[in-house]
Length: 184
Picture 1 (cartoon, rainbow, N blue to C red):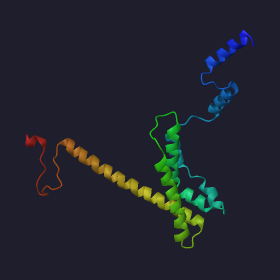
Picture 2 (picture 1 turned 45 degrees about the vertical axis):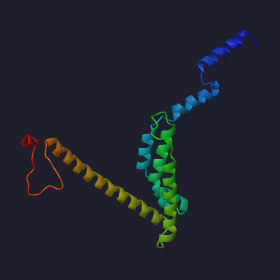
Picture 3 (picture 1 turned 120 degrees about the vertical axis):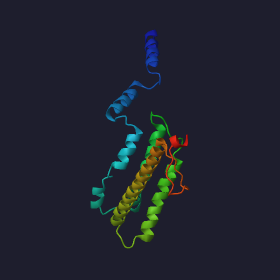
Picture 4 (picture 1 turned 90 degrees about the horizontal axis):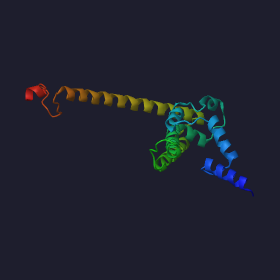
């Protein structure tokens, strides 16, 4: 081996600090150009918003019990995906372990399988799938409405406190509110 070769090798190692073969590095660079670097929060939002090709499932006659359980538990699966992407992404890692999300996803799937097997009331698997998805949508809508009402109530209480009204649940309802200025 000549001095020229070793100088070239030294320069290659200096440029390539991770010591990856140039062909492999080019492959990594090409893949980064094809697959966009998305934030794991965007992936979570997309997972929850997508319809998971439910139209093709409606037309399919070959829905398995596992497929049905996975689709009904899509929200738990999206949380698991969010956690796993958050662990390994280049962004701030909000999770140390995805064990809880994994257990939640598996428990949800097992629960849906049992629900279909024991409480299906002679429904087809597609009917059960779409019924459960509608129930989950209704539950989410109700939870959002409750949360909205609670936020509205908290905001009203905050405004009252900022205006200086003293409110106490045990206070006499016939008694008028007293402001800070009246107390001073």
